[in-house]
Image 1: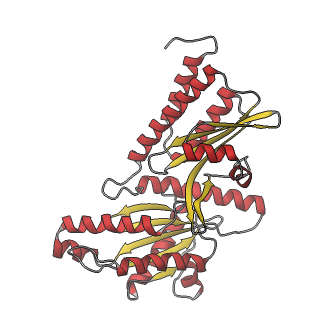
Image 2: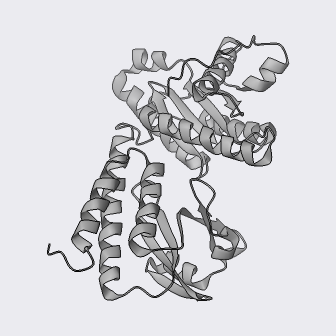
Image 3: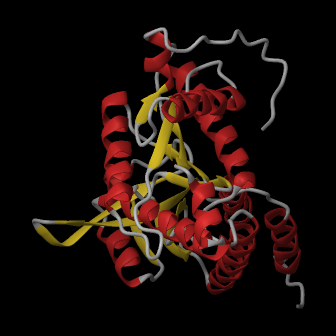
Length: 336
């Protein structure tokens, strides 16, 4: 590629180096927004995951945007934009005038998250050269997203793997700490839920590992059907799974998890028959390490397994009721 007076080839080479060295989706999104600020002198840049919600009273449904962290753009204002709707519906680059600036909406297909949209404001319209550079960057971003997705997902179930969980837990804690610092108060944000298929060893022993793998595949499919797009699903290892569930109180968390538990209990697994699941969860709190939150969820899970299985339990509720003895933490070790 020939270098032009604007340093285009150098820009793309640098972007390639920066994007390909990122090890998480969050870092990849941040890198792309930083590139847009540097190369296009963008004033505001945001990257959103997009989900299409079908509503009963609205045949065309509605769009929902969410991001890794607080963004510059007002999401409600964005959702009212006809240019954004056109971008999402037809997956075409769209633009609109915003005062003395121009706002661009760039659709970016993602391997696992469906569709992403890059939103940025600049002082004047992109020229042909900048359009070409933007096309190259978004193509490069999609390739990096595909490689990261393969690296961070379980081969059998297709759910995110333990490495992805490590990144998600760290990011969730940082997001919670930012919220805590801004508001100056302790506030629950999300729950980590540990799911364990009951008596799974019997499935492997009685039917063989091939049917055991089928149970894991079908179980992961039920997870995708039951949980929302913004909830994060992981295979932790063996027959253990994890959900980072975005409910803002324990009552809603219990409802969601019990709905899933009942869905599993009612499902007929081919050859195997009925399977149940035990669930324990703990909420993220300020000054609590990711490894501790995971340990708390694990304690709640094993309380369920020791008291009949096929139930949902909250670490906080069990602890407050005196059913668990909470260990003091020296905050010296961090496994994530």
